[in-house]
Length: 376
Image (tube, rainbow, N blue to C red; front, side):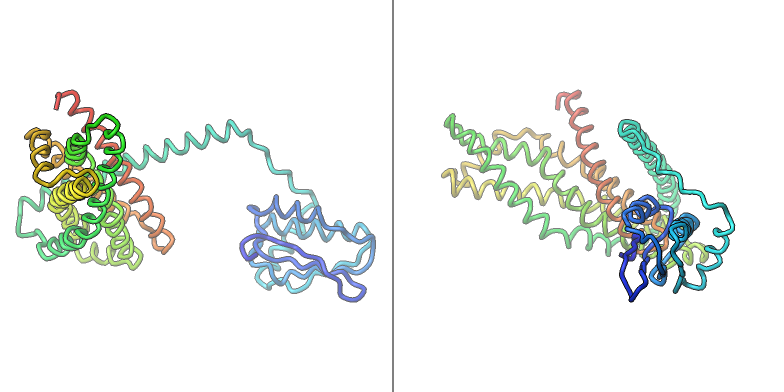
């Protein structure tokens, strides 16, 4: 009730008491107008407007209060306004000097026009985000060139810390999910291939699918949800506490201090995590083939060696640095965009995960098209 305006009627002796509270602002005007219209006003008598629970009042809310008072007075009621907060009384007195006109009814918006407007607003926001991300990429490239010109400026302690957090600490979840997805993929493939007596080709499906696509893509999505969101939350908390402003005042570059160590850490660790995910996915598939399809590990390895081309492994692994750079850049930029509120930290952390996963899948689709053009 504290966020939306409300009004309730009760009786005290011979008088009618109307209790009002919540937010009496223009955003609530339409709902309040409907609630006031539903009240059963007495033809005469004493009426007390108890405004003690009103938390916020603007000009529109004051107009509604005065319109109710004048409607009661026109019916012959004796109206008393009570318990209005002292800081709100000047606004009510100021509005009382104006003419007693009804608020215009809310304008009805055509649903089709509203939908088109929402799509346009979404496109504008998308373009604004894309331009901002390109601008941030330019800043990072400049910071990278300055750092490479003087390698002594690389912060190896921060780099090793982020490598441990983004890489080593992610091994359990990446390994477990890859193992399970490998088992599920092998099981689903076996369900279809058993109809044709071609269970052995489950190995081909699993090997090519995991090494080219699923291993690196699954790893990137896990890292985006785990490390990318952590980057945003960490930098966002520093933004809230004004630590980044203090860092800039001391002459330190936030790109060099905060962004580059995280970027380097993901560039180094994501390919290794993708390799680990490939191995665990194949292990999970091999385990299910052994248990469910009676394909022993030696036969599995021989068929895997026959099915895979030399470039199959590298076609999947070459995507990892691009995915890593995308996740790090989006996560760090969203963190730097945080304003000084806890709500902003949560909003930008969510945006970081959503945008990272979207861009990773978009990049994966682009790589698929390029590999198709190159007949790889």
